[in-house]
Amino acid sequence: MRYFILLLMIFMAFVLPSYLFATKDSFRMAKDHQYVVSSNPSTPNSDFLRLNNDETTNFEKMISKIRKTNYSSPTEWGESVSGVIDRIPTNENVIALTFDACGGEWGSGYDQELIDYLVTENIPATLFINSRWIDANLEEFLYLASLEQFQIENHGTEHRPLSVTGQTAWGIKGTTSVEEVLSEVTTNHLKIIELTGHTPKYFRSGTAYYDEIAVKIVESLGMKVINFDILGDAGATYSPKQVKEALLKAKSGSIALLHMNQPTKGTAEGVKLAVPLLKEQGFQFVTLDEGFKFSQ
Ligand SMILES: [Zn+2]
Image (cartoon, rainbow, N blue to C red; front, side, top):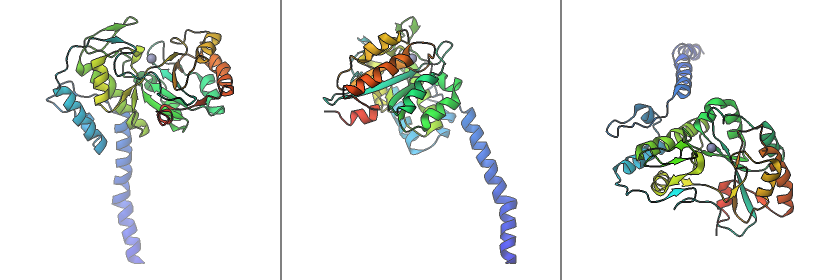
């Protein structure tokens, strides 16, 4: 008994404080962590390496291979260039609602009405989240990521069109090089992993514009580029009626692009009008992962 008490005292005096300290320290590290892949290929980035597990080691290998690849000049630019997926190849009556959260000065809102509706009705959906939106809505982000019905995916770091040559879309200058494409995709990718434990499989750029080389780079990082065949709210500019009409054009395997960051616009009302009608038509709502299981 005396030995037991002695051991207990040693444990409390030395082991317990170091454990508590380590936990606090790693928490602080996770909060302050900057997920920037080194722009100089010859200098490994210590922040990035600090994540240190099999997955990130693999990811590093992919990045290093991309940096060594001699890519040809892109010949395509737009929303449906080679490699972009805009619907689930199936004849089953499934539809994937996807909601972008773009972040930035005019794009960091949280559409409570929309999310509450999806949760209450238990409608599965895929949420493409930008790094700036996460920073502005960390609590909401963690809440959404904790819900089974939502699949969290990557909507970029600075919300830039994905180009290796600096092409522009909707007045927003795209990334200008392979290195900037890597940074735009991987910075937010690593952030989502660190915060949720979930590894994104799908990417959609800010503006949904790409060149085909940038798409290839995303694929080489182990992700697929997902766009849409239904423009659900046209950048959250549609009225509820327009959103409803757009969604009612759904076909088997449709992917609808909508927004969850514009609470004052017509998206939530439009979704609420369309969902019951789509159900009546026999449509099943799926996340992208669930949807691709129906691929033919
Ligand atoms: Zn966006």
